[in-house]
Image 1 (spheres, rainbow, N blue to C red):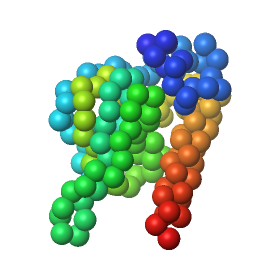
Image 2: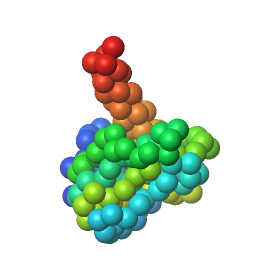
Image 3: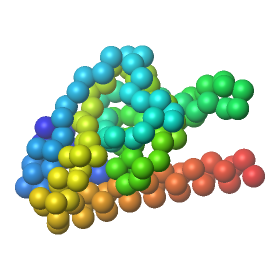
Image 4: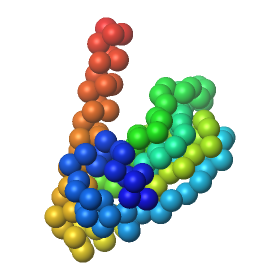
Length: 146
């Protein structure tokens, strides 16, 4: 697991010991192609790192038509906001291929913060960076439309 995490950009600022400590709070899961990891409107309970494979981010419009608006592949993170707020999931996420993912639940995230506060701060910084990058990318897409 250490090697998998080391290769993810989320952990660029983590030392080897920090990655090792953090990995003990996560679980590895295999997901088959076509499986839905969560639905738009679900309460968020976890985030995951894509170790291998691709997921589709799907939104439903007012006419209940679903559309893939983005994909996230190997090295990506999905569900960051669920660890930071109590709001519903903003999209449905489905496995476009077979996946290997590392899951961090909200409960385990709280344990990181209480048991290893310095590590918790690094994780929060990683979440903030990830959300910031996604927001900047979205703004770029809006500029192209306008």
